[in-house]
Image (cartoon, rainbow, N blue to C red; front, top):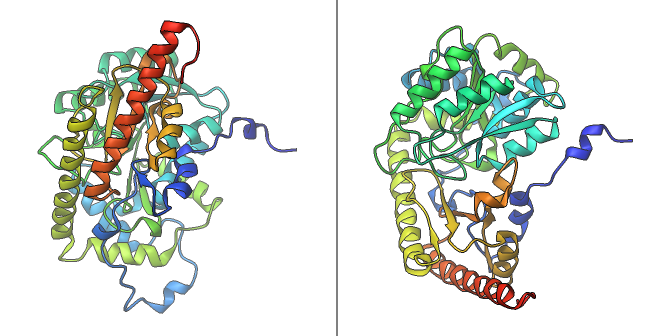
Length: 398
């Protein structure tokens, strides 16, 4: 017999779509795949031979020092000893789930939120308390009420270029949210995979940088969006009262993250070209973001609404006429276009939340962006026409 948690195990629609969307004839707006041509060279010349041996659970000292230096520059009080290198930032989510969540444990999350985090939290039995997102972030007063009423084990937030909504918390909201967390003593798990992909000046000060020495915090990052995602190297920095437990959990999970990927990442972030690489990356993705914005305006301007994201890799698009976005995906796939239906990003889906699509702009070419938006406009109009006919006739007309 399997464990009881297997009954809560859900598949990831993103991962299921990934195999399909890797076919050369599919235009994919579904995953958060970085563009291959924007990735740095995977240069393994001068690879130290001792990396063939097992390593320490915490991670390679050179990489941990580099990460700690970056985080200190962002305002976090963080030493290398507080850094745990993970197998992608997704492993950080898994470790935190194991540390905090038992069946029925309340966890506060944004609505919408990162699909794979919800998947992990749900597997361990979390009970979700949702915090609706506004253009400037969550409502700090609502956060306070949720904490007082439900006492969540931790709050999971993506304040910088949120996935999927693209929201970037403003300075006032960041300060107010951090104040609530300090006042209530609630642990924070802050996820920032997209912070370096910024296209306009915005406040990106981590929430964890606003917490004090006695507060409980965990801050996750990754090299998958700026480096090479196939290496699967991320990290989680944590307050001193949490870090040792995360290390022990990783020891029981996979011993340590691959040392070759860590070596490459350390050399990557310590190179003289790293700042210039980030600027090139931002210019590359800004062009694709602007191309999707223009294509959306041309083809979906009357059908949907959205906000131009100041960073990250996604548009969060609401269909004005509502509708079933999963059914819409099936129609689009028949015409070789893929996207992520918005329902999957809500911990507690409700039709009143609206019909959303998450559209990634990093992976498709400029030509594919234009062609894909044309297809989406066609299938949305077809679905809308079918719904109108159904409502008029009382029968299904599509």
